[in-house]
Length: 313
Image 1 (cartoon, rainbow, N blue to C red):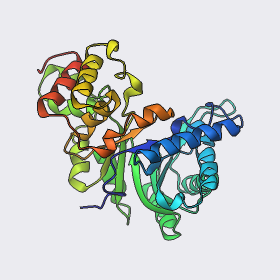
Image 2 (image 1 turned 90 degrees about the horizontal axis):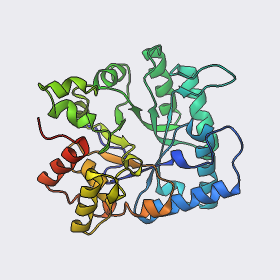
Image 3 (image 1 turned 180 degrees about the vertical axis):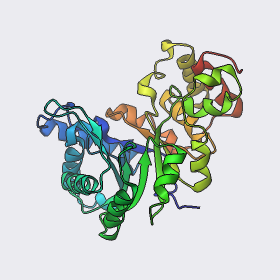
Image 4 (image 1 turned 120 degrees about the horizontal axis):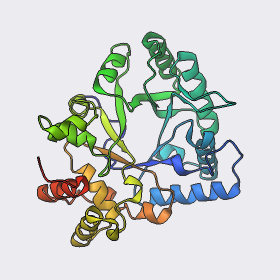
């Protein structure tokens, strides 16, 4: 079995919301202060893994995080730092595209390290599949990053089992993470299995067997969008949110925690990525770090049924 990048942690803090607006305009001191407040809130509840991507806020998410690290000597050694590359944003009238060419990956990692003010990434994820990528060239680039000590471990994002297996066949280091959209709202990862051999299953596009493939090989499943954009935080928002609220009250916790527990209860060992930049919502996730997922078998299915809006097939 492959060792997980940081076994024992229960949450990753996703830094996509840090750095000001989604534009190439400069960030300001207030953006650094807000980033610092979010990072401090995450650390206070026991989160020590931080997820980035070179495109988040046009690179500003990494840059403000680098400033936060500069303000806190010794913090870098206490955290796991993860970033992603492989997406090129639209620029000067040209459309965006996916880019896992070897030289591009090397350049993007160097740029991320500069913005983050660090000499290494603990984990690098390939952000999206690039159908034009030469796997041998890509593997050579990743091997070079590893040999130089610039990246400790590697993973992928938004890839299915076949894509992971194909890439792994060219690599001399193991892929240890697959980051996928998974939440009580984005349930296709569950429904591709539960709804097999039913008419409803024909409408589920999640690639069959990916969860099982990762679990079998010790590839950590990270769930981006884990809080579902706050959809279930207000009990008045609908039947599923009302049930989340009732379970939160019964278990003495918060709606945010119940939503995360729903993911953590799965035996594949899913690690939620929380992306809110609001310190109060980060703190509301405390029990997803400090307590064993408290949902029972029947409660888990009740949440799935309520969120789906349909009974078991």
